[in-house]
Length: 351
Image (cartoon, rainbow, N blue to C red; front, top):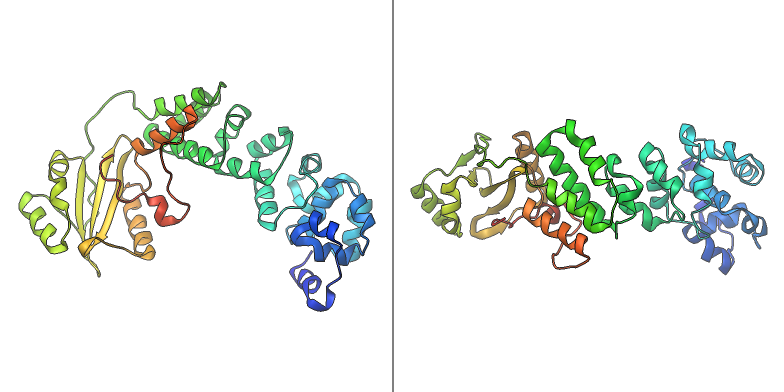
């Protein structure tokens, strides 16, 4: 369905009264459905669940083939399943109607259909969706968090929610970073070998510890306008200039496990990098008097440091603690919020 037709359907003069039952079943799509299937909407209610969800995909403007209103109703009510599937999913249509048949009676929100179609287009996610007993929006979120290599039944079965999936995905990213992309499939097979949550998350925690221990790598050298603090005297001068507690970290800086730079732009900022088994990580970024940098500046900083092999996000130690929570079913560790700045986990200087 074209965007122009959707706009016409949603225009005030097109509004058609939807019954309370339709509003319960169709949710955000109640007005559009009421225009296509007029009250008492009997033909719409008589449709199998998969057909109603297919209609919502088209009404949301997500279908692969543009349709007029009369053609939409004719297709949803009378076309063969393969034709309906191809209209909403294009080349990725095989198996989508049996999957939508497990999507429940109420229609979803537009963003949930977008996520579903995105996942269904990916082979591993499609396989997982086709094998679920019930396909619901709440089940899509953990699946979407995982990389394709981890979208397997033994892992999906033990996940308790989005946070567990996100932490396992983060661990996979770090292990792949440590071992190289050539080892990713072997790691995925090991994690997906079965067992309960303790077994799966336990393997992830084990793999975050490298086989061979080694000292910290040399600190990155991002160059001008980053100026590294490489002596106690300079550290004391910068601590006075920025009126912060940099001197408290002198030992870790001297040991080579923390590297501190002054970012000489306006406003100038002190940047602290920490080293752990996954490499150098952005641990803190503050202007004078410990003032926070705004999000645009932090995004710029992350992009620059990424070019020099410096990652952002939580430390390996913090992630391991959260994985241990998931393994044991406890909730001792807090997770950062969903926003970009929250996800940087700045201020985590000691781990």
